[in-house]
Length: 267
Image (cartoon, rainbow, N blue to C red; front, side, top):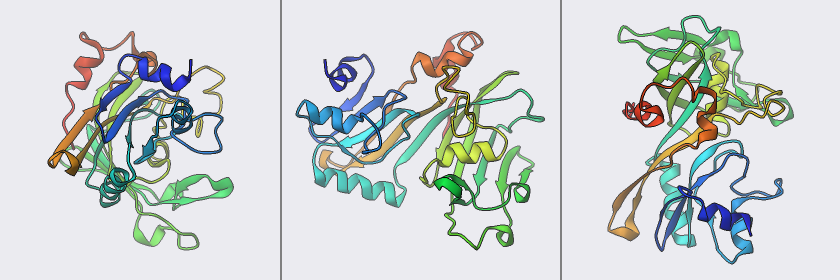
């Protein structure tokens, strides 16, 4: 059986679908599209005669909600919304707590421009030691680099990520992430550069794959306007699978993932 057909048939994989669009809960380890990968959702769907036009992308190692259009005009409309930053996005990420003095505050903003370094690797557009961290009287953290310390010898891209803490114990912290901008690897690089790399992220842990760990980053929620449906504000949520929760499954409070996620409020 074609792998796309298997994904379609899997419970929880199709988050929402109508004649114009499809939201898929993508498994980790499969790319959205691209010639560099042996398989991707677009190609697998095409093999069985189904046309999927991506409105955005998430990394191959990231699971969760991906929005596809079924017609080019729908893709163009939704892509404009992504470009104008009117699409609401929320991700879930697990980061290590142990060995990080003070941990993360209950909420915060990472305001660090990104650039591309050697071997096309995304990095913060400044020296790590120039990152300044502060916590306000209300307990909200902020990480930024003084303007005069931002690189000028390479192009840099303003990048902003908001987060809120949903749950934590002595080993791991679960974050809800709301990226304002949508740069390549933004969430992964931002968290790593402030000292909290995502669990299992091969960009910062080369042995993660050898240990059989997946990257604990999940595209959780999307909301966009559907003019083709009388202007409805479509809001969807793709629930993380057991593989996402594996590092903390035996330590979550009563009620499990549902109880933890119920505490989310947009930042």
